[in-house]
Amino acid sequence: MDNRKRRGRIESLTGKIFILSLFLVLLINLIVPDKEQSEQENRMLETMPKLSLTGVLNGDFMEQWESYMSDQFAGRNLLRGLKVKLDRLGGSRMENGVIIGKDGQLFEDIAVPDDELFKDNINAVRSFAEMYPDIPTTVMLIPDAACILSDSLPAFATVEDQSQMFSMVERGLGDSVSWVDAYSALNKHKTEKLYYKTDHHWTTQAAFYVFQEAAAGLGIEGDVSDDYVSYTVTDSFNGVLASKSGAGLDEKERIDIYVPTEGDDDVIVNYVDEAKKRTSLYDSSKLETRDKYGVFFGGNTSVMDIRTMSTSSQRLLVVKDSFADCFIPFLTPYYREIVVVDPRYYSGTLEDIMETYRITDALILYSGNTFMTDNNISGVFTGE
Image (cartoon, rainbow, N blue to C red; front, side):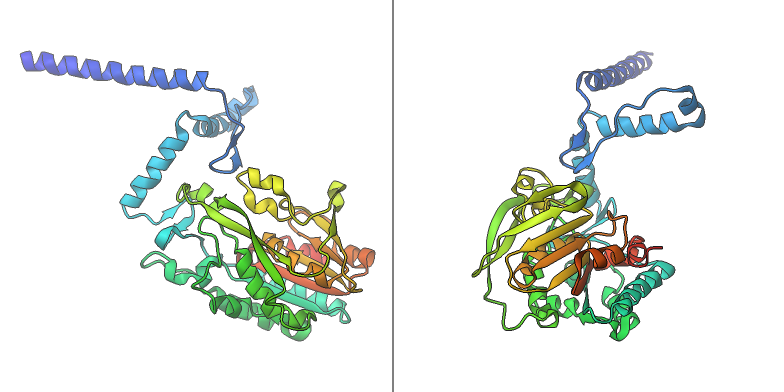
């Protein structure tokens, strides 16, 4: 009888503690103000949904409420970090779609392209080059980290062979373009710092190696290896893969910029659709934020018109994703004007750009994953 009473008292006490804990958590969540953005995850957080009869009846309100409570839960970052640690102790090497490799190297998986989209993107680029046969068109696909740094993948992890995909793109484009073999250029330096540990982008050093490989094909004469000097602009970068996965959040990395050793590197950068101008290729204000890679041009935008001090008469079109942002500064001494288009944000067509800016050369520069999956590419090239 005494044991039964004792168990009853313990169960009652346990129940009261549990209810009290729930009450305290609810109280804390009511007291702590909602946050608009997660600095750790580098994204906007869900706000409290508006209550409506329609939303309740169709289930939208409850879905939004669950997302809101998940985002605004007090102590969320602490619990998220604890989950990542427990997962890793349990042998998990994947968090929220991010592969956690050796020595803390984080990877995006290699994207497998949809067959139709893959063909559409290749055909669109080839059609563009054939439409302007007098304008040299160069194509440069940059391998993603999991392709080059395969030795750093976790044990037994396998990814798709991106170099084979690149070979298919090169064959599909044929002689209509000049192909830059970025894979071979980077593979020769795979023991060096070619990719950030915590971010999907390549480093500026990697971009410089590929620039040296591409220079002759772009009509740039001579050895360019000594024409630039690097400067560190931050040593506290922590990228989007760390934010997404919750792993490597304590890792601090360096971002370098390269500037010409000789000549005038003054520029005027016109952000066409935003109606603003800047006299630098770099936005130092981004170094005070989590999005420090945005130091290159301030981040993503639709169209930029870069006017340089170069004596060249050439006008270059660059069609790109964000991998091009740290590459473009190498080009400014060699072109009078560089027009940069990101199809993910640009609603017009390249025909409009070609006519407006009297383009003489074209460069198409993408990361492998973006080229394989971006359904905006064919539209901006063909206008369809």
